Image 1: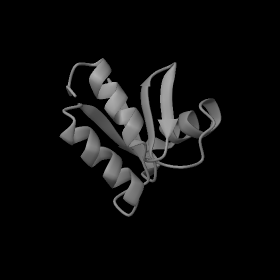
Image 2: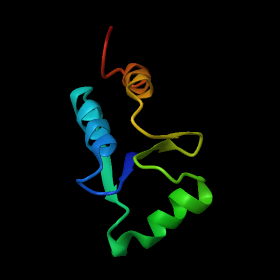
Image 3: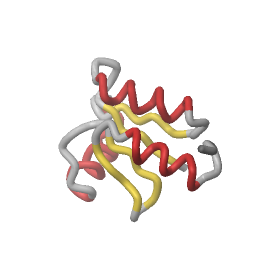
Length: 85
């Protein structure tokens, strides 16, 4: 399961990432790191993965990135067979 860690609706890059992923047919879980209930997720993103900028997209333990990266979203969609051409 792909997870997109965001910093809420005010984050333009987060909104754009989710929009492009949805358009590409990719399903994902959306985790708002500003919600106190997600403190463990926030620690995972910052301490374990080392990111300090949202959004953070995690496909698996070896495939993750930070920021709005339509190139990587497209690559992922092609790899998963969601987008052709």
